[in-house]
Image (tube, rainbow, N blue to C red):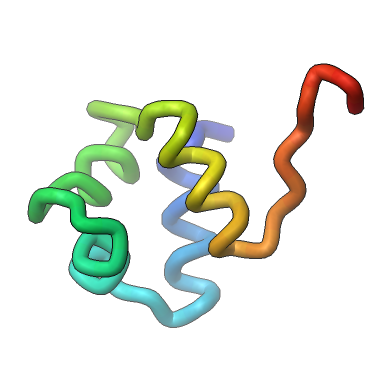
Length: 63
């Protein structure tokens, strides 16, 4: 399963909007749409921030 599909399911499951996520993270409009459609993926630092916001564990080299 792609990042975009997983992200969309997490976002929709929590009742969050694309625009709301973009605003809370200071992203340009359309960024989340590009992720969900597989055109782009977030940089590692932002990916870690997203994981924390969604309450997901971020694997490290030690785990």
